[in-house]
Length: 315
Image (cartoon, rainbow, N blue to C red; front, side, top):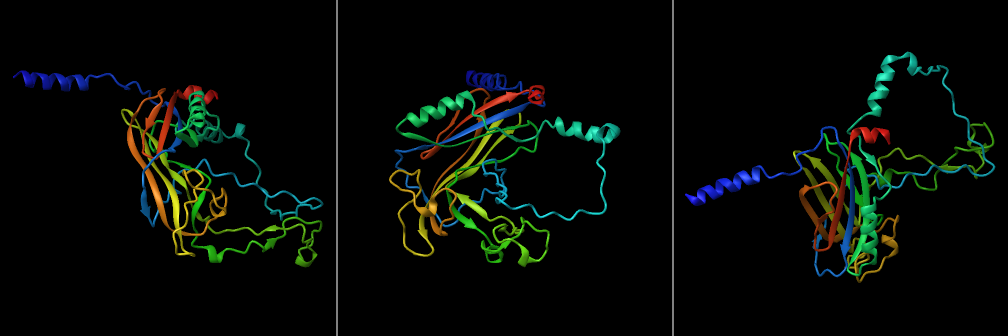
């Protein structure tokens, strides 16, 4: 009888236990994620021929494509202007345009990148850099809303370990150039200054890039906040050309040295085997508290800051 009373009391205690129940409707969150590595680990990892593709996730870490600069002494080739000119709509005279503009400005569920690192993460990054057994690998921050759909953000470094390009044979060679600048209005290719040329445009889909550190992170809100992590640290073991195991070449893994194939921004030979260290965790988190997701090789620090929608609009 006493045991039954204890069980009932324990159930009531858990149900009535105060938690993060004061999640305001329409609240936004700033999420900061820091991926770190344990340098003194002894994990063997898992050998895989096929590694996961995280490219469908929203990627704020892809470097922006720079527009080609105008060569000195060249003038832009004038574009053809259509005979039919569409007059711009004055939003002051169009109530519907005003309403659409207001809806876009106050979207409470927009996903926005944040470049500035918060003070808590700045301190954590500095401490990890100065520590012996750890090394910070990557940092990502963004703002999101508290309603579905919840975004999945891609976290990766800049070391490309594999490229999947089904349209490689259809792409134009890099030496094929298109004249976009010139000092003449002539349409004759022979009249185009060869120094005023740029690579031809590529209408084909971009190739899929697989990074050494790659994965996704997402913040989901139900009654409580949950952070979902799916990360991999990949290391090339074998290439198709040689057919023989090669020395590990990831610049962040102890005992290895970077090679030309794995240098940031370069495209390596296609490997046939990878050594993979993963981190897959999902659990409840709280705001304004440093959350730690532990793994044998890679771990994650997370800091979540609630932002009232009114404050987000003022910024």
